[in-house]
Image (cartoon, rainbow, N blue to C red; front, top):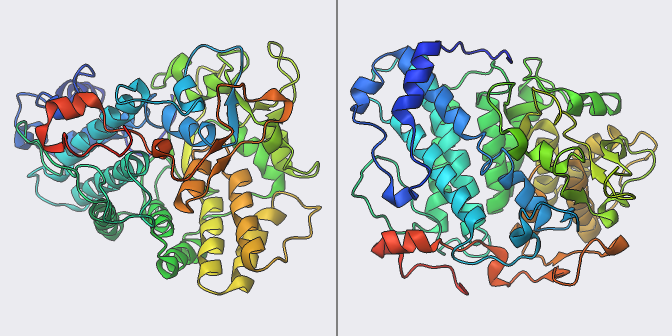
Length: 474
């Protein structure tokens, strides 16, 4: 079993799982109480809170969150990944961009994210007196809550820069079985995310396993949030703080392949600021992301041939693909998660230093400093393709280069679709090698109502206060 920095008392951990379990047959607005035990009794000391926090982190492993659906969605609905003609009938709704108010995958994201939020709320609102550790645990819970609201508002609402006053998702910060909240605005949800992260950063430490939020991990999420809002000065300043002061180091070209083959959490401050940790006991099994790419598993998800063609022969990232499948023949296989057959599967990297550099490059560009933007961009490129002399572009060409490098560096990590969405760009799939059958759209216009997921019919039925707040078009 993987070693992390926080010990877990087995009895307390099992007790916490019993206390904080939530029936997956109920929707968020119909949830039963966490337990019959009042919060002040359920969390009565640091060990209780530590166990509860580990249970909250465990929620992120869900197949419906970072275990598979969230990272897959953003590559599949965009132009990096397609579903093989030989498939297990999973995620065809996303591939075909054809989802309804009864969509099971959308419902599962919603339910799992709010379950994590409910668990985080339980920790944040505990009456346990503050000590250094208690405040740190609360801050980690705040960071998790911020992460979940960020994912929810991305999936179920318009981009912030398109319509900040539009409908976001309900903000629920305390447990109330009778609560039937309305949808908050997108701006209000982002304000809550920023408030949680700002408070968390003030009390988080700098040293911990990559499986836990640290102050710099929370800052990396904050930098991403500023980028999505178009707050370029804040995105740049926060990214530079991490780059200059965190002590984390980028991967060199010689480290890339081994980095992705490693399946244990890190304590060496190499690249990973925060990842969701799986081990031989706590993992999604055959429902994991790596199994969905592995040709010895389901193997349904393949890299688009047009995307593979963007990598030069000397780019080390090209080694993260296989060029054939024993089942599907001459296809491009994603090998960024190579440990599917291991009892100890791959982690999912939520926040990496390379993204922070790319955030800094994009923010510097929009701040009018193209020289600095090129510096940060080429720092990544030169560590991936030693034969490439680096970019020297300017203006719109430079922005396109930054976004294209984001596409390549962050591929299969749940980023591509959101980069297109926040710039209000169409999704344009290039159909090399017949990757896309006739029932799959090659262009998904920016104004297509399915660019955001629907509010689920079960939620509308359960809560009259959001019944009139369905996303347009559904």
